[in-house]
Image (tube, rainbow, N blue to C red; front, side):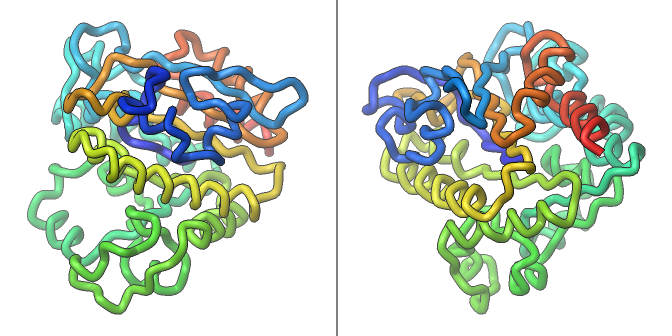
Length: 303
């Protein structure tokens, strides 16, 4: 699962939507060589492209806290709170995240999982000082016993930097981390996929570029993701299903600093894409809440 923070289905104007500008050709190739404002599925292809509602039936702009709790538990967190909330999960949602997060559900089903992102020592210091002020994904790992990987795993190629290439680690106090091409990061993910039933990689730089309204930065982060996706697909057997989705829109509209009300893409790629689509549709409303239960069912059925 490739989780892209802040990537919605935007308009056709390349000046507003950097995805429509063609900065991610591999990503677009999964959508019949068209950017995500046109999500058809090519007959005979290995890809299904769907739209998910990120508003979750609640007024206001979607936020990361409630959106990601919904995405990674299957419970409509915005509906429970009666509002959107973020960037961190509301403390009211912690018991739900603890009980229903995707890592716990997979573990209880006897399935193995890994969070592929590597974290610097500064993060672990922050985690000790502020154990509840964590993102949804890191808090879910902490709650369910999934180890958060550090610089040693990054050095040995058993983890992937959150910025994909590792270029930012010098500023994080780890100047010895080797910068790698995005394609190599994708290859690392393919190797992890052979060891675990479920592998998650989270890319937050898309959301940051959207908030910055920075076209050059948007091009850079999308190109890095696209290179990683290329490396992943080149080294991954087609029996492995790749799922790409987001929690809310942002980068697809650089004319505004805030999140958007746009749907987000759900891309399923691999020989199991049709079965995965059926699993998604079985779980109802075609919004963020269908993703985790669909993944758990699909992996259970695939054993």
